[in-house]
Amino acid sequence: MLNTLTRLKEIDWNNINNQLDAEGYALLSGMLDASNYHELTAADHRVETLEQRDSGCGTLHCYPSGLPSSLAAWRESLYRYLVPTANRWNEVLDVGFRYPGEWETFRKINQDAGQVHELTHLNLLNAGDYACLTQQNEGEYLFPLQIVAVLPEPDNEFTGGEFVMTEQRPRMQSRPLAVPLRPGDMAIIATAERPFRGTKGYYRVTSRHAISRVRSGLRVGLEMSFHCKA
Image 1 (cartoon, rainbow, N blue to C red):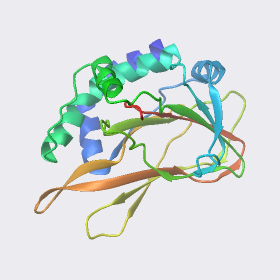
Image 2 (image 1 turned 90 degrees about the vertical axis):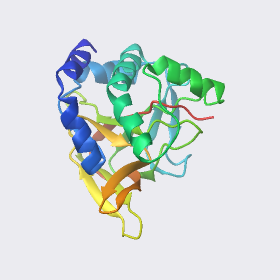
Image 3 (image 1 turned 180 degrees about the vertical axis):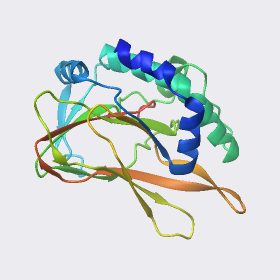
Image 4 (image 1 turned 180 degrees about the horizontal axis):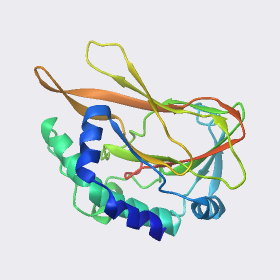
């Protein structure tokens, strides 16, 4: 946990913001290690399946009783770094809401709106499993950025399981994006919508994300949201 929090302080966040504006995602390489895998997979969780959600094949580890301590610390720290971008995006899209500086304050806004169910989870995909295109866009108060990661599992490699995104721009065909996530990497991605500056000003781009079919091995991924659902 400490290594990850220390690494966050060393990142060039101006460069990250530029990447998010241009592509809708930004890669943070080598943030996680095997100790993170052990902690997050061993933490108290509820097992669901992607089949139950009609959104693919695979197993989900959900945290209805609260996130593991390291994951909670990552979220709180990452929120502080990302909230300026979130507020800037709302400003250029003419959205009146502004996100508070601290995640705990934003969580209270979620709770007051009835958004109390955690969206953050691990996904465990074996050979043949995959996750369909989706958005974590449930609820009145959404944070426009989220985190995805691949956890490095000791003594195991996987093939396939590429993280992919699509962006739908007005009056244009969807644009596919392949995000080169490898074990230990995190990526910041647009949750559902983001601004894009065209020749006539800013317009909304709609984003979705998915995981391609795993061909071999076990792929353990993290999807971390800053907001909850009702």
